[in-house]
Image 1: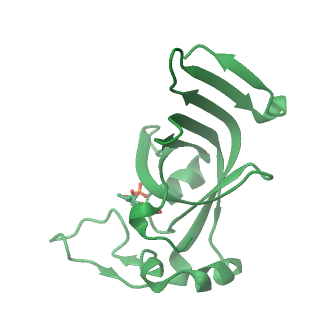
Image 2: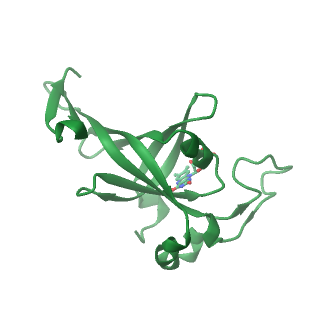
Length: 164
Ligand SMILES: Cc1cc2nc3c(=O)[nH]c(=O)nc-3n(C[C@H](O)[C@H](O)[C@H](O)COP(=O)(O)O)c2cc1C
């Protein structure tokens, strides 16, 4: 996606940290594959969400589509990809985007001042997070009555209406 960050779709990614506490942050939605039932996010392999997901792959992605007035909650396990096989994808990223992967010291490190860090593009720090969707919970706001439905992979995506 070669669109300005301001116009890129953003999602909230929830993980479980090593103490069992929920952790949330905003990420850019980089891709979705309806055939595989996956969602793709990109991150710095040294960021704290990566060891959290290595410890517990369960994750949730939250999307709010203001135009369609639909909230989408995606639940499943995340697979972390971070190896030489990503070089084709890395090479296609704009250099400004590559600079997001390779922050030193690593994301979340204490620093003496707000700008006391460097951004040096590092292909070795580029990681793809692939969420394999197991459950989708959709809420559509509409009048006179809102709608909510649950879709489950184990039920072959057969939908179930829920009270909103
Ligand atoms: C609008 C916006 C977009 C962001 N996009 C990403 C992204 O695509 N990937 C990413 O790793 N972090 C992104 N961030 C930063 C994360 O929200 C988060 O601060 C960072 O990844 C560190 O999270 P962690 O310490 O939980 O790993 C974005 C932040 C904002 C405000």
